[in-house]
Image 1 (cartoon, rainbow, N blue to C red):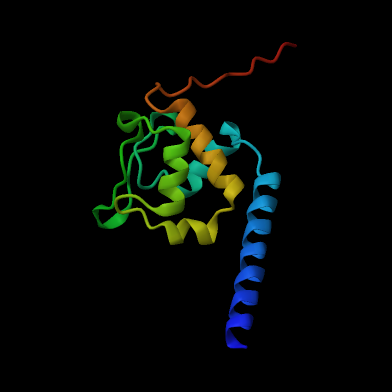
Image 2: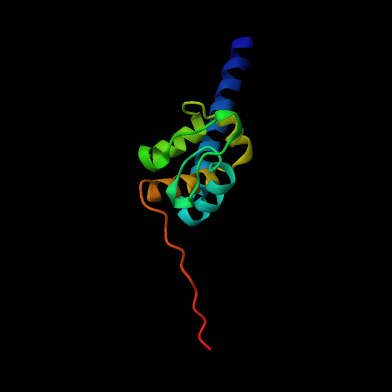
Length: 128
């Protein structure tokens, strides 16, 4: 009888897990680099050098992440580093504070601009 309940619980748990993955995949959108820049400044710029945001690691205690302009991480590597952790990156910290969409947006931003010079500011000219 116990075996029956254990198997039943395992089947229900597996079904719930696969349903959750399907829902997450259907609601996830590709990363938006423009949104990613804002999120990068909020969560990442203190620990990473990155020309695209003119950021230099300033975290206290000597904590510094990879120089993203030297590393040139791909979209998938950036997502993996945030979600699973890499080096000294504490994945739990970001998973509690960021949505998956925000993670995808940051990854799109990093993959698009890594190794490139800082974008020039566009000045608006008003004609009178």
